[in-house]
Image (tube, rainbow, N blue to C red; front, side):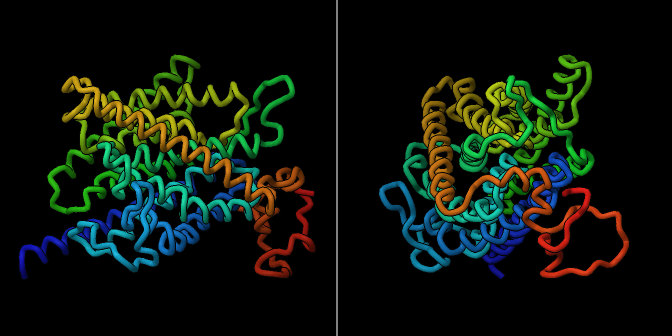
Length: 429
Protein backbone atom coordinates (compact mmCIF):
# COMPACT_ATOMS: atom_id res chain seq x y z
CA UNK A 1 0.00 0.00 0.00
CA UNK A 2 1.39 3.39 -1.02
CA UNK A 3 1.72 6.36 1.30
CA UNK A 4 -0.80 8.25 -0.85
CA UNK A 5 -3.39 5.47 -0.53
CA UNK A 6 -2.91 5.28 3.22
CA UNK A 7 -3.20 9.05 3.53
CA UNK A 8 -6.39 9.08 1.48
CA UNK A 9 -7.88 6.31 3.60
CA UNK A 10 -7.09 8.09 6.86
CA UNK A 11 -8.45 11.37 5.55
CA UNK A 12 -11.65 9.65 4.42
CA UNK A 13 -12.22 8.10 7.84
CA UNK A 14 -11.58 11.46 9.52
CA UNK A 15 -13.97 13.38 7.28
CA UNK A 16 -16.76 10.80 7.49
CA UNK A 17 -16.50 10.71 11.29
CA UNK A 18 -16.53 14.50 11.62
CA UNK A 19 -19.43 14.73 9.16
CA UNK A 20 -21.33 12.33 11.42
CA UNK A 21 -20.51 14.57 14.40
CA UNK A 22 -21.94 17.56 12.56
CA UNK A 23 -25.07 15.63 11.64
CA UNK A 24 -25.48 14.74 15.32
CA UNK A 25 -25.74 18.47 15.94
CA UNK A 26 -29.23 18.25 14.46
CA UNK A 27 -30.14 16.27 17.56
CA UNK A 28 -28.70 19.16 19.50
CA UNK A 29 -30.78 21.69 17.59
CA UNK A 30 -33.89 19.56 18.18
CA UNK A 31 -33.38 19.24 21.93
CA UNK A 32 -32.23 22.83 22.41
CA UNK A 33 -35.16 24.36 20.56
CA UNK A 34 -37.73 21.90 21.95
CA UNK A 35 -36.53 22.74 25.46
CA UNK A 36 -36.69 26.50 24.85
CA UNK A 37 -40.20 26.61 23.36
CA UNK A 38 -43.52 25.77 25.00
CA UNK A 39 -44.41 22.10 25.27
CA UNK A 40 -47.31 22.38 22.82
CA UNK A 41 -44.83 23.12 20.00
CA UNK A 42 -42.14 20.53 20.72
CA UNK A 43 -43.17 18.03 18.05
CA UNK A 44 -43.23 20.81 15.47
CA UNK A 45 -39.60 21.58 16.33
CA UNK A 46 -38.65 17.95 15.79
CA UNK A 47 -40.51 17.78 12.48
CA UNK A 48 -38.75 20.91 11.21
CA UNK A 49 -35.40 19.33 12.05
CA UNK A 50 -36.38 16.20 10.13
CA UNK A 51 -37.42 18.46 7.25
CA UNK A 52 -33.99 20.12 7.38
CA UNK A 53 -32.22 16.77 7.15
CA UNK A 54 -34.42 15.08 4.56
CA UNK A 55 -35.25 17.97 2.24
CA UNK A 56 -31.88 19.65 2.73
CA UNK A 57 -29.96 16.52 1.81
CA UNK A 58 -31.92 15.91 -1.38
CA UNK A 59 -31.91 19.54 -2.53
CA UNK A 60 -28.19 19.91 -1.91
CA UNK A 61 -27.52 16.74 -3.89
CA UNK A 62 -29.71 17.77 -6.81
CA UNK A 63 -28.83 21.46 -7.15
CA UNK A 64 -27.06 23.05 -4.17
CA UNK A 65 -23.65 21.39 -4.39
CA UNK A 66 -23.31 22.25 -8.07
CA UNK A 67 -24.15 25.91 -7.44
CA UNK A 68 -21.65 25.97 -4.58
CA UNK A 69 -18.68 24.01 -5.93
CA UNK A 70 -19.30 23.68 -9.67
CA UNK A 71 -17.22 25.40 -12.35
CA UNK A 72 -17.17 29.11 -11.53
CA UNK A 73 -19.28 31.56 -13.50
CA UNK A 74 -18.34 35.23 -13.07
CA UNK A 75 -17.33 34.59 -9.46
CA UNK A 76 -21.02 34.33 -8.53
CA UNK A 77 -22.10 30.67 -8.74
CA UNK A 78 -21.08 27.22 -9.86
CA UNK A 79 -22.44 25.68 -13.05
CA UNK A 80 -21.54 21.99 -12.90
CA UNK A 81 -21.75 19.05 -10.52
CA UNK A 82 -25.52 18.81 -10.25
CA UNK A 83 -26.52 15.34 -9.01
CA UNK A 84 -22.75 15.00 -8.37
CA UNK A 85 -22.22 14.64 -12.12
CA UNK A 86 -20.36 16.77 -14.60
CA UNK A 87 -17.06 18.59 -14.34
CA UNK A 88 -15.81 18.82 -10.76
CA UNK A 89 -12.17 18.12 -11.55
CA UNK A 90 -11.16 21.57 -10.32
CA UNK A 91 -11.84 20.52 -6.69
CA UNK A 92 -8.46 19.44 -5.30
CA UNK A 93 -9.04 16.67 -2.75
CA UNK A 94 -7.22 13.79 -1.06
CA UNK A 95 -10.61 12.22 -0.36
CA UNK A 96 -13.34 11.04 -2.69
CA UNK A 97 -15.89 13.48 -4.03
CA UNK A 98 -18.64 11.50 -2.28
CA UNK A 99 -16.89 11.97 1.08
CA UNK A 100 -16.47 15.68 0.48
CA UNK A 101 -20.13 16.03 -0.48
CA UNK A 102 -21.22 14.30 2.74
CA UNK A 103 -19.22 16.74 4.85
CA UNK A 104 -20.59 19.76 3.00
CA UNK A 105 -24.13 18.38 3.21
CA UNK A 106 -23.87 18.40 6.99
CA UNK A 107 -23.12 22.13 6.80
CA UNK A 108 -26.13 23.02 4.67
CA UNK A 109 -28.45 21.24 7.10
CA UNK A 110 -27.07 23.36 9.93
CA UNK A 111 -27.84 26.60 8.05
CA UNK A 112 -31.55 25.97 7.66
CA UNK A 113 -31.78 24.82 11.29
CA UNK A 114 -30.74 28.32 12.38
CA UNK A 115 -33.80 29.83 10.73
CA UNK A 116 -36.06 27.19 12.27
CA UNK A 117 -35.56 28.47 15.81
CA UNK A 118 -36.28 32.12 15.02
CA UNK A 119 -39.75 31.33 13.62
CA UNK A 120 -40.65 28.70 16.21
CA UNK A 121 -44.22 28.46 17.50
CA UNK A 122 -45.94 30.39 14.69
CA UNK A 123 -44.73 29.45 11.20
CA UNK A 124 -46.94 27.47 8.83
CA UNK A 125 -45.26 24.08 8.44
CA UNK A 126 -45.96 23.92 4.70
CA UNK A 127 -44.40 27.33 4.18
CA UNK A 128 -41.33 26.21 6.14
CA UNK A 129 -40.92 23.19 3.86
CA UNK A 130 -40.91 25.45 0.80
CA UNK A 131 -38.35 27.79 2.36
CA UNK A 132 -36.13 24.83 3.28
CA UNK A 133 -36.04 23.93 -0.43
CA UNK A 134 -34.97 27.45 -1.41
CA UNK A 135 -32.36 27.83 1.34
CA UNK A 136 -30.62 24.52 0.71
CA UNK A 137 -30.91 24.62 -3.09
CA UNK A 138 -30.04 28.22 -3.88
CA UNK A 139 -29.57 30.80 -1.10
CA UNK A 140 -26.82 29.16 0.96
CA UNK A 141 -25.03 27.41 -1.95
CA UNK A 142 -24.56 30.63 -3.92
CA UNK A 143 -23.22 32.44 -0.85
CA UNK A 144 -20.96 29.48 -0.11
CA UNK A 145 -19.58 29.64 -3.63
CA UNK A 146 -18.46 33.22 -3.10
CA UNK A 147 -16.15 32.21 -0.24
CA UNK A 148 -15.43 28.48 -0.52
CA UNK A 149 -16.22 27.62 -4.13
CA UNK A 150 -13.77 29.92 -5.87
CA UNK A 151 -16.05 32.95 -6.08
CA UNK A 152 -15.38 36.66 -5.80
CA UNK A 153 -14.88 36.81 -2.03
CA UNK A 154 -12.39 33.97 -2.26
CA UNK A 155 -10.47 35.97 -4.85
CA UNK A 156 -10.42 38.95 -2.49
CA UNK A 157 -8.86 36.75 0.19
CA UNK A 158 -11.70 36.41 2.70
CA UNK A 159 -10.92 33.91 5.50
CA UNK A 160 -13.75 31.88 7.03
CA UNK A 161 -12.32 28.53 8.03
CA UNK A 162 -15.51 26.73 9.10
CA UNK A 163 -18.34 29.18 8.60
CA UNK A 164 -18.85 32.04 11.09
CA UNK A 165 -19.89 34.14 8.10
CA UNK A 166 -21.00 31.68 5.42
CA UNK A 167 -23.12 29.58 7.77
CA UNK A 168 -23.87 31.50 10.95
CA UNK A 169 -23.99 35.17 9.93
CA UNK A 170 -25.89 34.35 6.75
CA UNK A 171 -28.25 31.97 8.56
CA UNK A 172 -28.70 34.43 11.41
CA UNK A 173 -29.66 37.32 9.15
CA UNK A 174 -31.99 35.01 7.26
CA UNK A 175 -33.54 34.18 10.63
CA UNK A 176 -33.92 37.89 11.41
CA UNK A 177 -35.73 38.54 8.13
CA UNK A 178 -38.06 35.61 8.74
CA UNK A 179 -38.81 36.67 12.33
CA UNK A 180 -39.61 40.25 11.31
CA UNK A 181 -41.80 39.21 8.39
CA UNK A 182 -43.78 36.56 10.27
CA UNK A 183 -44.19 38.73 13.36
CA UNK A 184 -44.11 37.93 17.08
CA UNK A 185 -46.02 35.15 18.79
CA UNK A 186 -49.49 35.97 20.02
CA UNK A 187 -49.22 37.65 23.43
CA UNK A 188 -45.46 38.17 23.28
CA UNK A 189 -45.73 41.98 23.22
CA UNK A 190 -48.52 44.10 24.67
CA UNK A 191 -50.05 47.16 23.05
CA UNK A 192 -48.04 49.24 25.53
CA UNK A 193 -44.79 47.77 24.25
CA UNK A 194 -44.04 45.58 27.23
CA UNK A 195 -42.66 42.10 26.65
CA UNK A 196 -43.95 38.86 28.17
CA UNK A 197 -41.80 35.80 28.73
CA UNK A 198 -42.89 32.36 27.59
CA UNK A 199 -41.15 30.06 30.05
CA UNK A 200 -39.01 27.31 28.47
CA UNK A 201 -40.72 23.93 28.62
CA UNK A 202 -37.63 21.95 29.62
CA UNK A 203 -34.28 23.56 30.40
CA UNK A 204 -32.48 20.26 31.15
CA UNK A 205 -33.49 19.13 27.66
CA UNK A 206 -32.20 22.39 26.20
CA UNK A 207 -28.89 22.01 28.05
CA UNK A 208 -28.40 18.50 26.67
CA UNK A 209 -29.04 19.94 23.23
CA UNK A 210 -26.37 22.56 23.83
CA UNK A 211 -23.87 19.92 24.94
CA UNK A 212 -24.58 17.91 21.76
CA UNK A 213 -23.97 21.03 19.70
CA UNK A 214 -20.75 21.68 21.61
CA UNK A 215 -19.60 18.12 20.92
CA UNK A 216 -20.49 18.34 17.24
CA UNK A 217 -18.64 21.63 16.92
CA UNK A 218 -15.32 19.82 17.18
CA UNK A 219 -16.32 18.06 13.99
CA UNK A 220 -17.50 21.36 12.51
CA UNK A 221 -14.18 23.11 13.10
CA UNK A 222 -11.50 20.43 13.23
CA UNK A 223 -13.15 18.43 10.47
CA UNK A 224 -12.80 21.39 8.12
CA UNK A 225 -9.12 20.53 7.79
CA UNK A 226 -10.30 17.59 5.63
CA UNK A 227 -7.11 15.78 6.60
CA UNK A 228 -6.48 13.40 9.49
CA UNK A 229 -2.79 14.32 9.71
CA UNK A 230 -3.22 18.08 9.61
CA UNK A 231 -1.10 19.40 12.48
CA UNK A 232 -3.63 22.18 13.15
CA UNK A 233 -6.31 19.79 14.46
CA UNK A 234 -5.19 19.98 18.09
CA UNK A 235 -4.98 23.75 18.02
CA UNK A 236 -8.37 24.07 16.37
CA UNK A 237 -9.88 21.84 19.04
CA UNK A 238 -8.41 23.75 21.97
CA UNK A 239 -9.42 27.22 20.72
CA UNK A 240 -12.91 25.86 20.06
CA UNK A 241 -13.09 24.68 23.66
CA UNK A 242 -11.66 27.88 25.11
CA UNK A 243 -13.97 30.17 23.17
CA UNK A 244 -17.08 28.20 24.14
CA UNK A 245 -16.01 28.19 27.78
CA UNK A 246 -15.29 31.92 27.86
CA UNK A 247 -18.60 32.72 26.14
CA UNK A 248 -20.52 30.75 28.75
CA UNK A 249 -18.47 32.13 31.64
CA UNK A 250 -18.92 35.72 30.45
CA UNK A 251 -22.72 35.40 30.37
CA UNK A 252 -22.74 33.55 33.68
CA UNK A 253 -20.96 36.37 35.48
CA UNK A 254 -22.72 39.11 33.53
CA UNK A 255 -26.20 37.87 34.49
CA UNK A 256 -25.05 37.17 38.05
CA UNK A 257 -23.89 40.73 38.64
CA UNK A 258 -26.47 42.43 36.42
CA UNK A 259 -29.58 40.60 37.63
CA UNK A 260 -28.44 38.94 40.84
CA UNK A 261 -28.74 35.43 39.40
CA UNK A 262 -27.01 33.38 36.72
CA UNK A 263 -29.57 32.95 33.97
CA UNK A 264 -29.52 29.42 32.53
CA UNK A 265 -30.81 30.19 29.00
CA UNK A 266 -28.31 33.04 28.72
CA UNK A 267 -25.39 30.84 29.77
CA UNK A 268 -26.45 28.15 27.30
CA UNK A 269 -26.59 30.68 24.49
CA UNK A 270 -23.39 32.33 25.67
CA UNK A 271 -21.46 29.11 25.19
CA UNK A 272 -23.01 28.66 21.75
CA UNK A 273 -22.10 32.26 20.91
CA UNK A 274 -18.49 31.49 21.76
CA UNK A 275 -18.60 28.46 19.47
CA UNK A 276 -20.08 30.47 16.61
CA UNK A 277 -17.54 33.26 16.99
CA UNK A 278 -14.45 31.03 16.90
CA UNK A 279 -15.62 29.09 13.85
CA UNK A 280 -14.14 31.53 11.32
CA UNK A 281 -10.76 31.90 12.96
CA UNK A 282 -10.18 28.59 14.70
CA UNK A 283 -7.22 27.83 12.43
CA UNK A 284 -5.85 31.37 12.41
CA UNK A 285 -5.89 32.81 15.96
CA UNK A 286 -3.99 32.09 19.18
CA UNK A 287 -5.27 30.44 22.35
CA UNK A 288 -5.39 33.76 24.22
CA UNK A 289 -7.23 35.46 21.39
CA UNK A 290 -9.86 32.70 21.39
CA UNK A 291 -10.70 33.40 25.04
CA UNK A 292 -11.23 37.08 24.27
CA UNK A 293 -13.26 36.27 21.16
CA UNK A 294 -15.57 33.96 23.10
CA UNK A 295 -16.08 36.35 26.02
CA UNK A 296 -16.94 39.28 23.76
CA UNK A 297 -19.31 37.03 21.79
CA UNK A 298 -21.18 36.18 24.98
CA UNK A 299 -21.65 39.83 25.93
CA UNK A 300 -22.64 40.83 22.41
CA UNK A 301 -25.20 38.03 22.40
CA UNK A 302 -26.79 39.49 25.53
CA UNK A 303 -26.83 42.99 24.02
CA UNK A 304 -28.40 41.70 20.80
CA UNK A 305 -31.10 39.87 22.76
CA UNK A 306 -32.06 43.13 24.46
CA UNK A 307 -31.94 44.92 21.11
CA UNK A 308 -34.49 42.48 19.65
CA UNK A 309 -36.80 42.91 22.64
CA UNK A 310 -36.64 46.69 22.38
CA UNK A 311 -37.70 46.47 18.75
CA UNK A 312 -40.47 43.96 19.40
CA UNK A 313 -38.82 41.27 17.29
CA UNK A 314 -39.64 37.80 18.59
CA UNK A 315 -36.82 35.24 18.40
CA UNK A 316 -37.79 32.40 20.78
CA UNK A 317 -34.42 30.63 20.89
CA UNK A 318 -32.04 33.54 20.25
CA UNK A 319 -31.06 32.55 16.71
CA UNK A 320 -30.10 36.07 15.65
CA UNK A 321 -28.04 36.97 18.76
CA UNK A 322 -26.25 33.62 18.82
CA UNK A 323 -25.61 33.05 15.14
CA UNK A 324 -25.77 36.39 13.33
CA UNK A 325 -24.17 38.71 15.89
CA UNK A 326 -21.58 36.20 17.08
CA UNK A 327 -20.88 35.17 13.49
CA UNK A 328 -20.27 38.77 12.49
CA UNK A 329 -17.99 39.33 15.46
CA UNK A 330 -16.06 36.11 14.84
CA UNK A 331 -15.47 37.00 11.21
CA UNK A 332 -14.24 40.48 12.11
CA UNK A 333 -12.06 38.96 14.83
CA UNK A 334 -10.11 37.09 12.14
CA UNK A 335 -9.10 40.45 10.68
CA UNK A 336 -8.05 41.63 14.13
CA UNK A 337 -6.33 38.61 15.66
CA UNK A 338 -5.14 36.36 12.80
CA UNK A 339 -1.53 35.44 13.39
CA UNK A 340 -0.88 36.26 9.73
CA UNK A 341 -2.37 39.48 8.41
CA UNK A 342 -4.27 40.53 11.54
CA UNK A 343 -4.51 44.19 12.51
CA UNK A 344 -3.46 43.59 16.13
CA UNK A 345 -0.77 41.05 15.26
CA UNK A 346 0.86 42.46 12.14
CA UNK A 347 -0.64 45.94 11.83
CA UNK A 348 -2.31 45.19 8.50
CA UNK A 349 -5.76 46.58 7.61
CA UNK A 350 -6.22 44.57 4.41
CA UNK A 351 -7.62 41.35 5.85
CA UNK A 352 -9.97 43.24 8.17
CA UNK A 353 -11.38 45.26 5.28
CA UNK A 354 -11.89 42.12 3.20
CA UNK A 355 -13.69 40.46 6.11
CA UNK A 356 -16.02 43.45 6.48
CA UNK A 357 -16.80 43.53 2.75
CA UNK A 358 -17.56 39.82 2.83
CA UNK A 359 -19.81 40.18 5.84
CA UNK A 360 -21.83 42.98 4.28
CA UNK A 361 -22.37 40.92 1.15
CA UNK A 362 -23.27 37.68 2.93
CA UNK A 363 -25.57 39.25 5.52
CA UNK A 364 -27.36 41.34 2.92
CA UNK A 365 -27.78 38.28 0.70
CA UNK A 366 -29.16 36.13 3.51
CA UNK A 367 -31.58 38.81 4.73
CA UNK A 368 -32.85 39.98 1.34
CA UNK A 369 -33.23 36.54 -0.24
CA UNK A 370 -35.10 35.24 2.79
CA UNK A 371 -37.41 38.25 2.75
CA UNK A 372 -38.10 37.78 -0.96
CA UNK A 373 -38.53 34.02 -0.57
CA UNK A 374 -41.14 34.33 2.17
CA UNK A 375 -42.98 37.05 0.25
CA UNK A 376 -43.22 34.74 -2.75
CA UNK A 377 -44.17 31.72 -0.65
CA UNK A 378 -46.89 33.76 1.03
CA UNK A 379 -48.61 34.20 -2.33
CA UNK A 380 -49.44 30.49 -2.42
CA UNK A 381 -49.14 29.36 1.20
CA UNK A 382 -49.72 31.59 4.24
CA UNK A 383 -46.41 31.80 6.07
CA UNK A 384 -48.07 32.40 9.44
CA UNK A 385 -50.17 29.90 11.35
CA UNK A 386 -53.66 31.01 12.32
CA UNK A 387 -54.43 32.33 15.79
CA UNK A 388 -56.41 29.18 16.58
CA UNK A 389 -53.52 26.95 15.48
CA UNK A 390 -51.08 28.96 17.55
CA UNK A 391 -53.38 28.85 20.58
CA UNK A 392 -53.86 25.08 20.40
CA UNK A 393 -50.21 24.53 19.56
CA UNK A 394 -48.49 23.57 16.33
CA UNK A 395 -48.03 19.98 17.50
CA UNK A 396 -51.75 19.27 17.36
CA UNK A 397 -52.44 21.68 14.49
CA UNK A 398 -49.87 20.36 12.03
CA UNK A 399 -48.89 16.93 13.27
CA UNK A 400 -51.90 15.64 15.17
CA UNK A 401 -50.04 14.63 18.32
CA UNK A 402 -48.52 16.10 21.47
CA UNK A 403 -45.01 15.48 22.71
CA UNK A 404 -46.13 13.70 25.89
CA UNK A 405 -49.28 11.86 26.94
CA UNK A 406 -50.43 10.75 30.35
CA UNK A 407 -53.02 8.25 29.11
CA UNK A 408 -52.03 4.58 28.90
CA UNK A 409 -55.21 3.52 27.10
CA UNK A 410 -55.42 2.56 23.45
CA UNK A 411 -57.42 4.90 21.25
CA UNK A 412 -59.16 4.52 17.90
CA UNK A 413 -57.46 6.53 15.21
CA UNK A 414 -57.94 7.52 11.60
CA UNK A 415 -55.05 8.43 9.37
CA UNK A 416 -51.38 7.90 10.21
CA UNK A 417 -51.74 8.61 13.91
CA UNK A 418 -54.48 11.01 14.92
CA UNK A 419 -57.18 12.67 12.86
CA UNK A 420 -57.63 15.99 14.59
CA UNK A 421 -60.87 16.67 12.74
CA UNK A 422 -62.46 13.67 14.45
CA UNK A 423 -60.53 13.57 17.73
CA UNK A 424 -60.09 16.67 19.86
CA UNK A 425 -58.26 16.91 23.12
CA UNK A 426 -60.67 18.55 25.58
CA UNK A 427 -57.76 20.35 27.21
CA UNK A 428 -56.98 22.19 23.97
CA UNK A 429 -60.42 23.08 22.66
